[in-house]
Image (cartoon, rainbow, N blue to C red; front, side, top):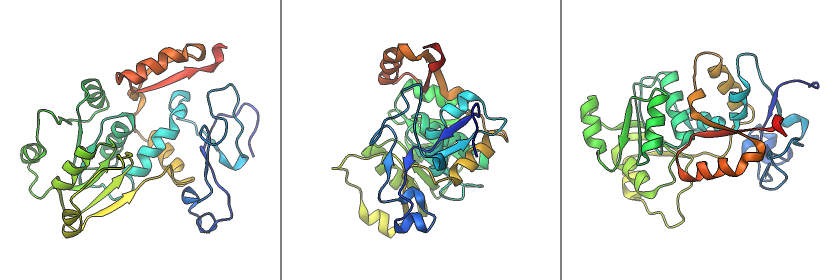
Length: 266
């Protein structure tokens, strides 16, 4: 069980436990999922109420700051580890904090080339600070030129769509290899169109990502954090809880990574 004073985090998806997916062990696919902060009170408070089975103990070697962002890191881990990345060429569209963390994960687990695209100068610089060497400004560079410079001949093996941008997703489809595997976390606009002929005749595999695998994703991300994965630079700002408005303003500007609020100052 858990005890007072224990360092814990919490899975934000509350599941029913009795639907077909829950009974099959696929709790992240529960049809009755209720989201903390969506369907019930969230974490912008001194205290949070969740079922005991949703509580996850923080292992030694994971800092409090890292523990504060396990939820979004879990999205990155679930997406990045959907397919085998060892020795593969990986394309990530969208250098938001989750996309950047996915790039760091790809490097950590042994991808050959990890390429990430975006148009936000701050976020591209942040990606470089987390060790991503192939950061592409889509306004200035074309992926075929990047692939040529890297010595790639057939396209990317794995694509991780993190941007929610239709043009970026279409660019991904055009530049992956025959039989490539794509994981989609970004929420694309309802009117997004893609060349379905290319998807079919290139025999692409598409996997859509929802949340985190409960609790396999949690075990894997903590295992990586305690074995050398460094995502600390993604936390770019920290504020007292009462200064939350300033935090939201910076986040909305697009010039931040993850922002942490300190609730001990109340």
